[in-house]
Image (cartoon, rainbow, N blue to C red; front, top):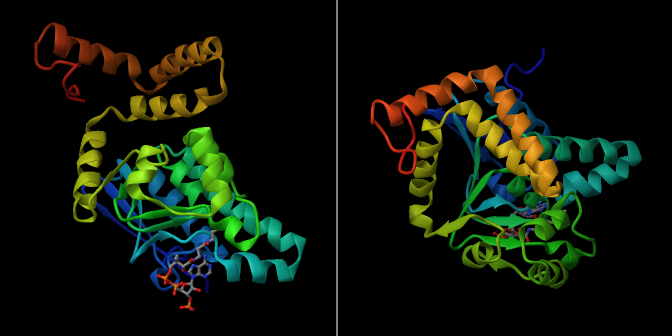
Length: 275
Ligand code: ACO
């Protein structure tokens, strides 16, 4: 008898007024990522991606951790004992959902409530906006147990942080506070722990009002352009804008322009048009 809700247990979620709150749900294990969690997370993300009642996805953690990185027992020791095939399978499962998140159809917000280590940098980077609690702690702890920051983690640090800071972070195995993570570019912003949910909710409320297809095109363009020249980026932007027309982009722009120029109902410099 197949499990009718195979996603439950290591991942839980609720959908509330347009926002899907997804939780790493292994608080006793500081939400470290086991192969099972990786499989269940992929199922949950795919289930939520095209639901009409989901406008924004928030990824957070149950308990004191966001995620303590890969599970040293189930992801590393147990998988390695089974040989190369098992290792590759578990790598693909984890990298697979990190990738889904990077190219997610909906806007995503990481709400980092606590510990965030190593493999956790993959989903951290996957989320479009990252809001951390001031008392969260971020670490590339790999060097502390004799490996290099793999699974994307070193690339994330190098991509997001100033080079000197990223190098120090990867080599020293010291943790950053939420405030330092903000200063060094690893997260968008940090706020006191008791304001974390409120701030994330506020961001979600703004994102919910934006035109869905334009928002998706915007986030994909920002990610795609990272390794493009200026001219290639410009060309990509033209094509992405034109592709938006397949999703009603021309009509949306026409309506927004009308609301500004003719109806004087809103100012694009100050607010979002009435979608
Ligand atoms: N892998 C496996 N088990 C873990 C992990 C992990 N990454 N993180 C926590 N746990 C387990 C602990 O073994 C412990 O299990 P037990 O209750 O069966 O003994 C339980 O979670 C609770 O952990 P504690 O260490 O007791 O929790 P504490 O709050 O004191 O410390 C901290 C939290 C700092 C996160 C600590 O657990 C830790 O250092 N974890 C490892 C962090 C890490 O380096 N992750 C790997 C990054 S590299 C990578 O992802 C490739």
